[in-house]
Image 1 (spheres, rainbow, N blue to C red):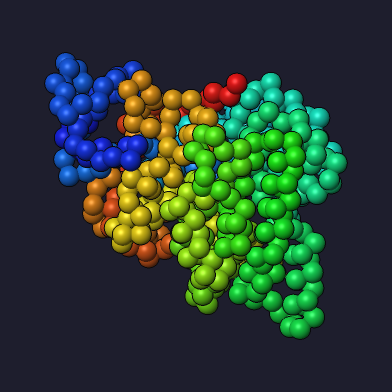
Image 2: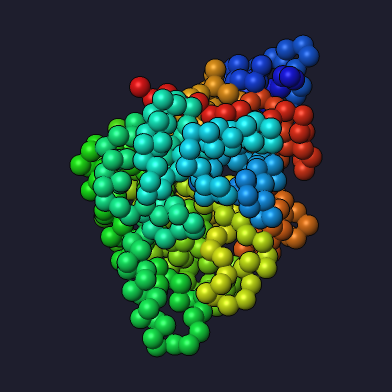
Length: 446
């Protein structure tokens, strides 16, 4: 392993930006100071005119392996993440087969160790029948990011809406419970009502079918369960203004038992974009009317919404084509969340310090990740250098296996210059070093 020193850069960390230097030795941050004399044998990286931020941690991705590798693989999507400044990810259990046993969960960790350039963790999946297997994850609470419950429509048999099963998991899990919240009965009712009035459904019908009520009722139900059993609940991809009333900003994040996530596509697109993007922005929960996006930004900035993620969910190009009813739901996004949020930094929507808080610090705090998410001496050197220079999303620079992006043609004011993972310079000026793989995330849960 090589050692590095990042010289004369602007360090953005824990609410402050300051000029300084960072010494990386043996995969960790050895020293942070205004000036550091370069030790013998240490490689210098010129950080002048650039910003050094902690690597983003994406708490919700779908990398499709095993079983759906025509869409994506752990290798391809982790590589795309690295190019986008995402140094760690937490991946969902809706693969084929779904992750319903401890053996299948460990099989995923083996894939991560073999193929992922980024650090990795995998959620334990839930079904209507496997609650006893789910609770065995308690024995690995410092080695697994959490338990995932689809409390809304999903593929296969991942939907969990049996009240008794939900109570057993909320009562018994010692891990964070992450939920997809959309009320299935409301979705079915809305769809039936639309189908009775029009022959062919369109992409713009998606937020009508999966409306605000469906999201709110399911999120409310999850919160009631969490409060009943004092469970650690994290509700994923909040998409409505109405849901914000369910979340508080009165406690420090480390003391919250109920937390929330907002995704970059819900902060960027609105229902108006179906006219030009069509099925390319079909996702669950749906991208909704503009007033919801405005409320989500407000909730993010006032700390009702705790973290920013992508819900990266790639599909093959042909799976997104054709009529609305058959087009798959999900967007590939993990290569571009940092650049997208930096665009909003440039536009004055949020500060770079706030962006770093929501994409790195808060994720580490929320999940109790060990020694990551901050630029601190002794922590793993998961670091990203960004520079102010125009970057455009083109077909040629998209790294997703699916080969497309809903952000195609978007101009960003920043570029990713370098990405360090565990002190390894994995990405530098467009070139990858694939000689070392990422590490399994560890957690500090008592």
